[in-house]
Image (cartoon, rainbow, N blue to C red; front, side, top):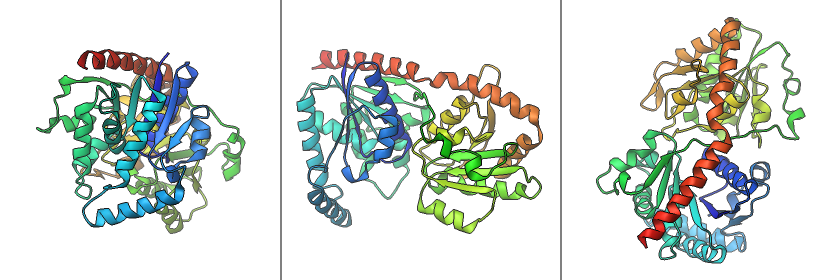
Length: 405
């Protein structure tokens, strides 16, 4: 059995965080010793941890001295205004993580997202412990962002020290096309799909059609995602509104929380448009859906958790051609849904979403067939396959790292 430390920048709601928590719990259940480490104690979503990784200890920088950390974060804000981002606090996080690593003596450190990768790489210098980086899409996102130019160099530095890289989709590897990044062939690398074994929670009775006054025979479209515009929430609402008058049996359920979604709800009041807010176990709501939506044009989209959640419940999916989404919907009998086109951070033709929703509303045979395919398509996302792949890669990384030191 291995001793594993999983490092993240924060433990808020998000795809990388959700997967890392699920992976940590799966390692624990399999008999490994595992800890979670994050950079921001004030950003820890305790409900999310209780739901996804209840048995895994969490170590958060700043938890022992919240007032001091608040002052450090304010100093960070000043540093950013002076073009010295993370000039003080980050160095203290590195020291704290290094102390934590020396205390825990993990066999391997697995980091998620660029800033966590960088801090882990710096903390591990000279300690003889391999770093395995899981790429979730932020490397290519920051390559195209002008407002955080210091982040990509940190990612490049982290990759220089990594023993192995896990990627979700080929586009995650765009960073390796840069001339000043080590060649991909010089380190272990493997595509591993995020694993997922979702279960309903004790709160499931509160997440029902009855709770939203939706009839049992209604056609329910639903969406679960981070509450940012690029996930396509606005397009989902527009398509619903264009169909709703002619299809009184149609409802749209939107599961997420943000100021953007609050504003969207205020702009579009409708008795069959349901904003549920945050859910610590979205599966509870997904089971209410007939069809899942993700019309995303988010540049960092790789392997969206919500699509795996939809498929696990036997729900067909209408989603954008982005990242690994088309492959996610593949089954032995064909696609478990409909792919719509996107380009240049926009849907190419939003009417495609409306047309796909209309097809499911009017063709019961199509809906039934795609529901059947959804369960077939989900098989590749079972946590047992993901866990076995990570265990094997961690063991390889240990061997390669030992040979190199």
